[in-house]
Length: 350
Image (cartoon, rainbow, N blue to C red; front, side, top):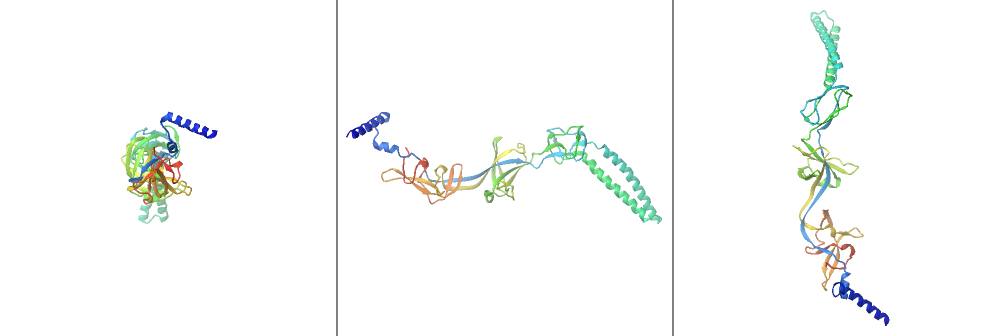
């Protein structure tokens, strides 16, 4: 009997304490506080877009380092950094005095060989010259002309010229220093036409085609977004990361530099009207099934949840597109607080 009185006294004390904190508290209210609180969202048809987002890079085919083709002392540097030059412009020269001396000597030998050939041809016309002497003279002329052509080619390598129009980005060589074959002289860049290049996972290969539109933004130009179309889709899967390359040309460029980072967005799915729900509402059970909790009122006007398995088509930026059939338009699903509930549990929203 004392025990019952003590229990009643404790319960009364608890109720008095709760009342003093916020009004009258009944056992029904105490029980209601134990019901999990959730947030609900109405199932509706919405537009859905999915995008492939990858990091890209700016590249150009006209970004080269001009090297010396022969060894020697650099006699002149004709350009400076930042200078715009045309195709074929003289960039630098290498000392070719030895070549010039050899060419002058060879010219003398060739002149004499041609003189001897002319004499042999005249003797042959008169019928007093031998065929052997004539062929020997011809061979001598041909041999010297071949050597002269080789020296002329080497002479041309002493003058380093621009293979295309562009801007001198950096000068490596200095006048008076010794250079060897393949030594760097200048870096020449033409950024008028650049390419946007990106690597995309092979799982998207069937969705990416030549002509597919994409939007490109640049971290260094946060307010710049360019609409481009893909000009080339790679025909090779990189085995190390299972990706393929795409390329898009950007002409009349005045802003972007080679190796500049870019962010590429390609819309590979556009649904005008689909069953789209919040990704927060989609959970996975122990069998790896995707499911949501649908909340509906019972006969006693309480909210009760029911587990419904759904088939996810695609996810993007917090939205999930699911197959129609499992859920009905107008139903309410749990989008927050679902982690602590199970099938047929009672829930509340306040």
